[in-house]
Length: 262
Image (cartoon, rainbow, N blue to C red; front, side):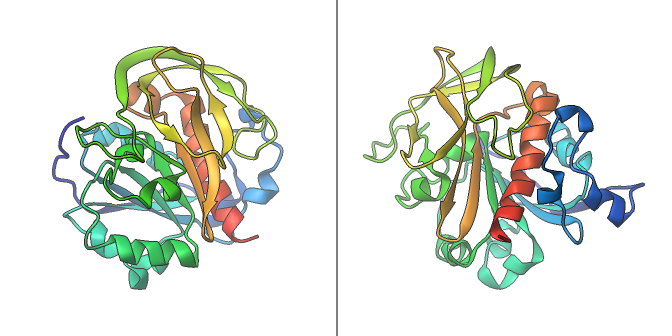
């Protein structure tokens, strides 16, 4: 659980797809998903990907989004522009925020980001983002759960353990939800977390029975007007390249964006 390397702002657009084609596609038809009409948008979705506070294999991670249909994306890390992009006056520049950080310093951006969420911003949290802001009590209400990988003792964040390179089975808890519809239980090689908090009101999407992991590992809920998704999966290339992980991330982004527009 190391310190983040210097990241740089970057923005890429998918090549070789017209906007109309990109919007019309959901994912691969092999997923068996029947609700594509719920996930169509008048233009490509704009993502803000936020990182910081944790190392990761950047090229492999960002390739997930490079190869995702119907989106454009911008990346910013804390200390290199993320704080400014999370301000209310700048939040109109992206449709969905994707957090892959483990940042701990909530100032100065937390108050601004709370205003963005109260107004309504689709947000997806991945993997170690569950361990951000251990001392910020509101954070667990935003995500729908929280982890504590440090030594600080706080009543709302139990001490969390982790295990690298675990092969485990992911169970689809809700086969009728737009994010998971048509998916089957699958195997993944990834990092597991145990002893983290899951709020009782979340809608559970994914579970596992592996002994090194908490049972619930994926959910949706709403914070104020903002649709929220958390997926515990996603530590490194073995997860990034798993087609089920990619499907879940893409659908989470699209579900959150569509949910706000209801």
